[in-house]
Amino acid sequence: AVRDIINILSRRYPGIEILIVPVLVQGDGAAYEISEAIEELNKRNDIDVIIVGRGGGSIEELWAFNEEATARAIYESRIPVISAVGHETDFTIADFAADLRAPTPSAAAELCVPDKNDIIYKLNICLNSLFNIMLTYIDEKKSALNQCREMIKAFNPALFINQKRQYIDSLNSKLVSSIKYKIDLYNELIKKYCTNLNILSPLSIISRGYSITYTEELDVVDDIKKVKVGDNINVLVKNGYLDCTINELKEGNVNGREKNK
Image (cartoon, rainbow, N blue to C red):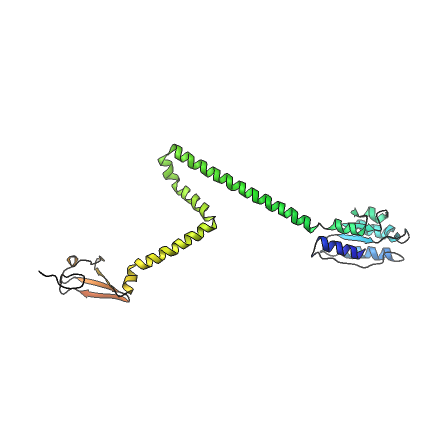
């Protein structure tokens, strides 16, 4: 009977912790040992259910389960007790004192724990239900959003649009951010833009050996007509500034050659 209980519990609910308390189940002292074992188990906080059982036998062999000590210990147990004594046709007082009677020890094991396959099946049903609920919710929100867009197109209230533009942009941003591939796309675009900005940056040009000239008013000097002799100018190079004073102005082309006059 014990081996059957262990095999069924392990098969139906792998990983379950089983505590076996060996006691006499027939003869002198059996009722005392059974009641003592039940009382000791009730002192623990890690027991969920107790199976009191044994295999079949004659009425004399099963008599320990008819004695008052056994029945009282089962009745007073704060932990639920399943009585599984003998065969289906065997009845003892323990059956009536227990919270539940099982026809056999094997049946008691099946009553104690759910079948893992049933749990997996129910979990899959729950997951499918949640998935369908999510899809329905998303479809409802999409439909509501489309209705809002149609209302805006139909009435075209310029003032309303201006007031709600920020809200619509925020809603659209949240909707887009919920889609992962969109986020990845924007990340790639940002990287591309940063690269282009670095290429076009004046600092990048300076790092290649060029310089930028500013007046004291921070205006870029791109024409000698913007300055005159005696003006102070700043020349920005890759590792600092040059504080300069104009001593002479000469017109020339981009190669620095003076123009023919």
